[in-house]
Length: 453
Image 1 (spheres, helix red, strand yellow):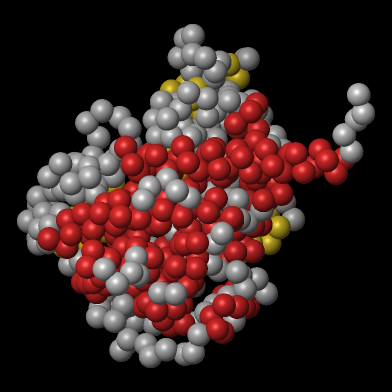
Image 2 (cartoon, rainbow, N blue to C red; image 1 turned 90 degrees about the horizontal axis):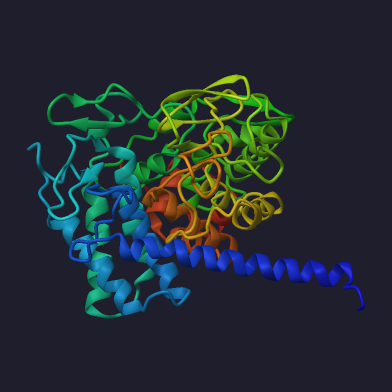
């Protein structure tokens, strides 16, 4: 039998990887079809019994439906119907200071009852989760551009929801934006400071034509950044991998720069690329000696874990955490990895992400027997429950917040669909321009009038 040439093997491997990504995307997308209430469009936060909806997961679903149409996962009419049900619900749901409302001042509570859509768990009115919801609405408004009554209503409601958000109120008298608010205690003490997923929040807030953030809010946020050198990579530090991904799900930051990144000769896309390599290098270095870490086995982010518990394993006392914001290189790190966060880094560093996804699918078998692609997290150091099929701990759950970035970042790498939709949204362009971004694709558009400061 004649051996295949290296070129033939390379083509075969590339084709197999594309097939893996296509299947992973399809299976992950199914979360938004099945873990939903079609009557109001709400998406389940987590596949545990009696769990509420997440407004962030619902916003991601709104962005995923166009992918579903383009990939043949659902018809355009079905996607428009689901989208319209979602937007109608949020527009008509109770807005007010009452403790059982759905939202207030154009923002929404983090968790809502799947059936009634009312606030649950006495949770906070979340500025960042509302950001993802509104971004999803704007993406839907850009995609559904047909001259039909349903699609015209989608566009109208998307703009109306975005216009209602009172970003200045969310500052609570400060320069930066507060994390949230509750009717019982008012604004939370925490603010969006330090590099984090609020990059999208500030862009949307600055782009508002009705209640915009003042331009001073953005440099007040970037003034809290930490520039570091880890494993030879100079980058804007954030420990959890999701921070380097969630704003990028929506906005193409390639070759556009604000004042901070101009001063560093970089951009936020390149920064996320470096952060991805730092993750891999940390796993190879494995300073805490956890099982499984390596070149193709990495991905440390905010996730649930096997704890809280303490176990003595191979003579070493290990402390395991529950849901915490794990990060590198400073921790916390208890050996828990999140395969979805690897997939969500695909556009930044495909040369290391593709082999890692392949490892998660074929060697670690983390997709086997799962309805929606990868489960939330796994820990090869923790033995898990007695007799489990893996021999180590694997989360029993899926989370909507994890599923959306997998669908969307695979698509952004393949076709750039969501990036194109958001580039065509004037509010995104205005927000970026008011934040001081220049260059790249922004040069294609004329300077637009900005909201009054």
